[in-house]
Image (cartoon, rainbow, N blue to C red):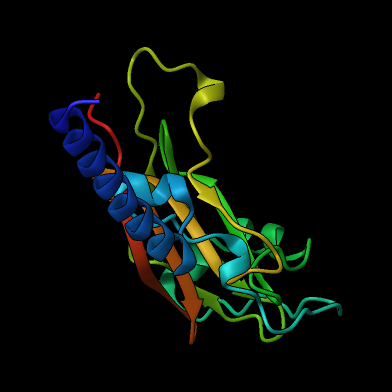
Length: 181
């Protein structure tokens, strides 16, 4: 073996050892190897934001205290009667607001209070996408305080937005842009 070949092998081993150390550091901090190689963290998951309590009783009557709540009273009442489907004791009621548009409200099953987010969601899809390939604009679970919103908020931009339901408000945790169509 020539000295040049030996030096190349040593440098290769040195570089590989350094990269391995970097990857091990990143994976030990909670990231997977694939995420570490991609250079970004995984998006939040439902298990990352568990709901502390689970309401099992009869939902309280919807409180129609605002003009907006009164305007959507039928949708709110119909949604609330099925009981909680989000964050332990809340119900997300959703309805169409045009072609490819979803408006929603969050109803507290314990109190009947209604909370409207400051946006509605428009579905963002390219012409080549099939309907079964487009993700639901709102994704949520009863045992989690995470709400995943996919699309354009108030017809601006387009992305995947991860919100945490906290103190009766949606707080943006992180977001990623959708690819351009």
